[in-house]
Amino acid sequence: MPLDALTQSVAETPLATLLAQLDIEPVAPATLAAHKHTQVQRFGPTFWYRHQKLLGFSLIVSVGCMAFFGGAANALMPPPSPVAMWITMGWLCLMAGLIVSGVFTARGGSHWEERWLHVDRLEAEGVPEPVSATARLLQRALPGSTVVIGELIRESVVLDPYLLLVRDQEQVCLGVWDDDGIVALAK
Image (tube, rainbow, N blue to C red; front, side, top):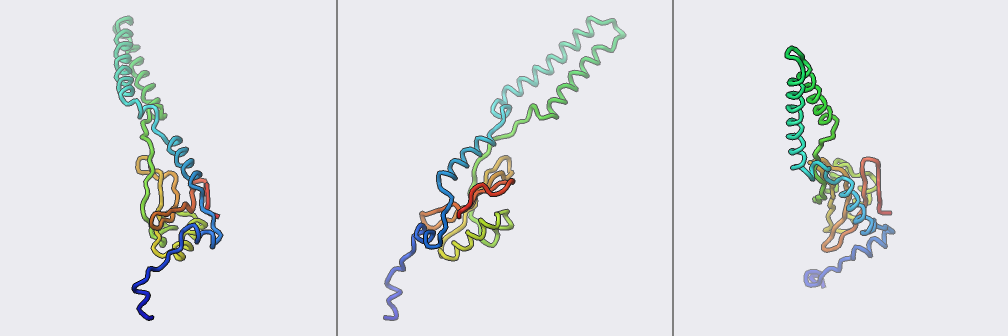
Protein backbone atom coordinates (compact mmCIF):
# COMPACT_ATOMS: atom_id res chain seq x y z
CA MET A 1 0.00 0.00 0.00
CA PRO A 2 1.21 3.54 -0.62
CA LEU A 3 1.00 4.65 3.05
CA ASP A 4 2.73 1.62 4.57
CA ALA A 5 5.98 3.54 4.89
CA LEU A 6 4.32 5.88 7.38
CA THR A 7 3.41 3.09 9.78
CA GLN A 8 6.49 0.87 9.51
CA SER A 9 9.88 1.69 11.00
CA VAL A 10 12.82 1.97 8.65
CA ALA A 11 15.54 -0.51 9.54
CA GLU A 12 18.88 1.17 10.13
CA THR A 13 22.09 -0.56 9.20
CA PRO A 14 24.31 -1.01 12.26
CA LEU A 15 27.56 0.89 12.05
CA ALA A 16 29.69 -2.27 12.27
CA THR A 17 27.76 -3.86 9.38
CA LEU A 18 28.20 -0.81 7.17
CA LEU A 19 31.93 -0.64 7.95
CA ALA A 20 32.27 -4.30 6.96
CA GLN A 21 30.34 -3.68 3.72
CA LEU A 22 32.61 -0.74 2.84
CA ASP A 23 35.70 -2.73 3.89
CA ILE A 24 36.75 -0.08 6.41
CA GLU A 25 38.49 -1.09 9.62
CA PRO A 26 38.30 1.74 12.18
CA VAL A 27 41.02 2.59 14.66
CA ALA A 28 40.69 0.13 17.53
CA PRO A 29 39.17 1.61 20.70
CA ALA A 30 42.12 0.27 22.71
CA THR A 31 44.55 2.08 20.39
CA LEU A 32 42.68 5.37 20.84
CA ALA A 33 42.46 4.91 24.63
CA ALA A 34 46.17 4.11 24.89
CA HIS A 35 47.05 7.09 22.72
CA LYS A 36 44.89 9.44 24.79
CA HIS A 37 46.43 8.20 28.03
CA THR A 38 50.00 8.47 26.69
CA GLN A 39 49.47 12.01 25.42
CA VAL A 40 47.95 13.22 28.70
CA GLN A 41 50.99 11.81 30.50
CA ARG A 42 53.40 13.31 27.96
CA PHE A 43 51.83 16.77 28.13
CA GLY A 44 51.20 16.74 31.86
CA PRO A 45 51.81 19.65 34.20
CA THR A 46 55.40 20.72 34.92
CA PHE A 47 57.09 20.26 38.29
CA TRP A 48 56.68 23.95 39.16
CA TYR A 49 52.99 23.91 38.21
CA ARG A 50 52.36 20.94 40.51
CA HIS A 51 54.36 22.63 43.30
CA GLN A 52 53.35 26.27 43.00
CA LYS A 53 53.75 26.92 46.72
CA LEU A 54 57.32 25.63 46.52
CA LEU A 55 58.01 27.95 43.57
CA GLY A 56 56.80 30.99 45.53
CA PHE A 57 58.78 29.91 48.58
CA SER A 58 61.92 29.38 46.44
CA LEU A 59 61.69 32.83 44.90
CA ILE A 60 61.18 34.47 48.30
CA VAL A 61 64.16 32.56 49.73
CA SER A 62 66.16 33.67 46.69
CA VAL A 63 65.44 37.34 47.42
CA GLY A 64 66.35 36.75 51.08
CA CYS A 65 69.66 35.15 50.04
CA MET A 66 70.38 38.08 47.75
CA ALA A 67 69.80 40.56 50.59
CA PHE A 68 71.86 38.48 53.04
CA PHE A 69 74.89 38.08 50.79
CA GLY A 70 74.73 41.70 49.66
CA GLY A 71 74.59 42.86 53.29
CA ALA A 72 77.33 40.45 54.37
CA ALA A 73 79.60 41.63 51.55
CA ASN A 74 78.88 45.25 52.46
CA ALA A 75 79.80 44.59 56.10
CA LEU A 76 83.06 42.80 55.21
CA MET A 77 84.34 45.27 52.60
CA PRO A 78 85.71 48.74 53.15
CA PRO A 79 83.07 51.49 52.81
CA PRO A 80 83.88 52.71 49.29
CA SER A 81 83.83 49.15 47.82
CA PRO A 82 81.15 48.38 45.18
CA VAL A 83 81.42 44.59 45.82
CA ALA A 84 78.08 44.39 47.64
CA MET A 85 76.32 45.98 44.68
CA TRP A 86 78.08 43.58 42.25
CA ILE A 87 77.07 40.53 44.32
CA THR A 88 73.46 41.72 44.42
CA MET A 89 73.44 42.43 40.67
CA GLY A 90 75.05 39.04 39.98
CA TRP A 91 72.36 37.26 42.01
CA LEU A 92 69.60 39.16 40.20
CA CYS A 93 71.16 38.29 36.83
CA LEU A 94 71.40 34.61 37.83
CA MET A 95 67.74 34.51 38.85
CA ALA A 96 66.67 36.39 35.70
CA GLY A 97 68.68 33.94 33.58
CA LEU A 98 67.01 30.95 35.26
CA ILE A 99 63.54 32.43 34.75
CA VAL A 100 64.20 33.36 31.09
CA SER A 101 65.75 29.95 30.31
CA GLY A 102 62.57 28.23 31.43
CA VAL A 103 63.76 26.59 34.64
CA PHE A 104 60.76 28.04 36.46
CA THR A 105 58.07 27.42 33.82
CA ALA A 106 54.69 26.50 35.26
CA ARG A 107 52.69 25.00 32.38
CA GLY A 108 49.43 23.42 33.40
CA GLY A 109 48.30 19.95 32.44
CA SER A 110 46.39 19.00 29.33
CA HIS A 111 42.88 17.59 28.89
CA TRP A 112 40.77 16.14 26.08
CA GLU A 113 37.80 18.06 24.68
CA GLU A 114 35.35 16.78 22.06
CA ARG A 115 33.10 18.89 19.83
CA TRP A 116 30.77 18.34 16.91
CA LEU A 117 32.23 19.28 13.52
CA HIS A 118 30.48 19.68 10.17
CA VAL A 119 32.08 17.62 7.39
CA ASP A 120 32.51 20.72 5.23
CA ARG A 121 34.89 22.14 7.87
CA LEU A 122 37.19 19.13 8.21
CA GLU A 123 40.12 20.49 6.18
CA ALA A 124 39.71 23.98 7.66
CA GLU A 125 40.13 22.41 11.12
CA GLY A 126 43.32 20.62 10.03
CA VAL A 127 41.95 17.10 9.57
CA PRO A 128 44.27 15.16 7.22
CA GLU A 129 42.82 14.28 3.80
CA PRO A 130 42.66 10.47 4.28
CA VAL A 131 40.75 10.90 7.55
CA SER A 132 38.35 13.52 6.14
CA ALA A 133 37.67 11.43 3.01
CA THR A 134 36.69 8.44 5.16
CA ALA A 135 34.51 10.67 7.33
CA ARG A 136 32.65 12.06 4.31
CA LEU A 137 32.13 8.59 2.81
CA LEU A 138 30.71 7.21 6.06
CA GLN A 139 28.51 10.21 6.80
CA ARG A 140 26.92 9.96 3.34
CA ALA A 141 26.33 6.24 3.87
CA LEU A 142 24.95 6.74 7.42
CA PRO A 143 22.22 9.39 7.48
CA GLY A 144 21.91 10.92 10.92
CA SER A 145 25.53 10.35 11.88
CA THR A 146 27.75 13.15 13.13
CA VAL A 147 31.46 13.81 13.14
CA VAL A 148 33.16 14.60 16.45
CA ILE A 149 36.68 15.94 16.73
CA GLY A 150 38.61 15.33 19.93
CA GLU A 151 41.45 17.67 20.79
CA LEU A 152 44.14 17.56 23.46
CA ILE A 153 44.17 21.08 24.92
CA ARG A 154 46.93 22.63 27.02
CA GLU A 155 46.49 26.29 27.89
CA SER A 156 44.22 26.87 24.83
CA VAL A 157 46.67 25.20 22.41
CA VAL A 158 45.50 22.12 20.48
CA LEU A 159 48.16 19.44 20.70
CA ASP A 160 46.86 16.15 19.38
CA PRO A 161 43.45 15.70 17.66
CA TYR A 162 41.39 12.66 16.65
CA LEU A 163 38.14 12.21 14.67
CA LEU A 164 35.11 10.08 15.59
CA LEU A 165 31.98 9.17 13.63
CA VAL A 166 28.98 8.93 15.96
CA ARG A 167 25.47 7.63 15.34
CA ASP A 168 23.06 7.02 18.20
CA GLN A 169 25.07 5.06 20.79
CA GLU A 170 27.67 3.78 18.32
CA GLN A 171 30.95 5.49 17.58
CA VAL A 172 34.12 4.65 15.66
CA CYS A 173 37.47 6.40 15.49
CA LEU A 174 38.45 7.37 11.94
CA GLY A 175 41.91 8.76 12.64
CA VAL A 176 44.43 10.21 15.06
CA TRP A 177 47.10 12.72 13.99
CA ASP A 178 49.56 15.27 15.34
CA ASP A 179 52.08 17.77 13.95
CA ASP A 180 54.29 14.95 12.67
CA GLY A 181 51.50 13.28 10.67
CA ILE A 182 48.89 10.56 10.99
CA VAL A 183 49.30 8.36 14.07
CA ALA A 184 46.42 5.92 13.36
CA LEU A 185 44.01 5.73 10.44
CA ALA A 186 40.85 3.75 9.61
CA LYS A 187 41.81 1.47 6.72
